[in-house]
Amino acid sequence: MQIPVAEGVFTWPDAEPRLIGSRCASCGIVTFPAQASCPRCAAAEMVEHLLARRGRLWAWTTQAFSPPSPPYAGPTGDAFVPFGVGYVDLGDVKVETRLTVADPDALHTGMEMELVVTPVRTDDDGNEVVSFAFRPVA
Ligand SMILES: [Zn+2]
Image 1 (cartoon, helix red, strand yellow):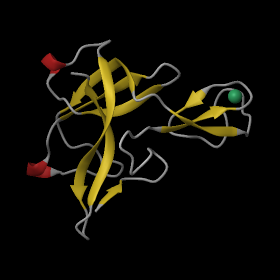
Image 2 (image 1 turned 120 degrees about the vertical axis):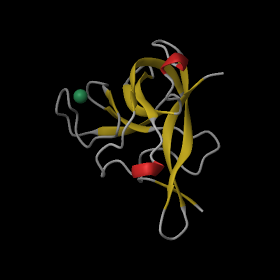
Image 3 (image 1 turned 90 degrees about the vertical axis):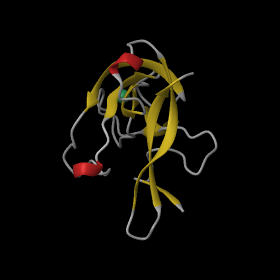
């Protein structure tokens, strides 16, 4: 069984998953992750807003060593696999995300990226824990 790493982050199960953000009913700013109140105008009415599945790579780097856990929930020690991290500009918001690619030669600012849901680990009950990432559009 596949279970999401956290509830309310992306639509799942879904053949075309979307990230779940929020939009301020007052000023229109979009946030991800979803927030209960607006970071810009402090209005308390935020509505669910599904984000675009594709965007442009805005900034990125590669994670060559195991980050602090939590929030990191993937393999550590000898099992650690380097991965890319970055921001993808989805038009109305920039999303901080893991990238499926860790090779600097395969990444460049402005390239088109799309959302994927990928396994990050197996939990103690044998469930495959999945999280979101962005990959280059072929
Ligand atoms: Zn607002």
